[in-house]
Length: 78
Image 1 (cartoon, rainbow, N blue to C red):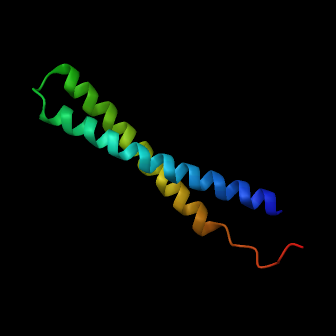
Image 2 (image 1 turned 90 degrees about the vertical axis):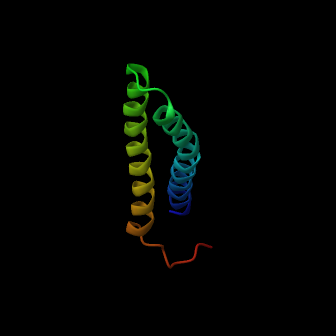
């Protein structure tokens, strides 16, 4: 059971870390697109960036939810 718990913990940590790492460059992309001259390309970039932002937020929510939903085992392995 311990290796499975460890794998879940590692997966949750990876998802959370990856989501946080993606937030900063995505924010820069969105800010640049918002400050650029309005055109079809900047609108397309903003639309795609907003979708990506929503996916990243969903990943973070999922990682947090899995942390709270899975109770920790109180038994010790020998």
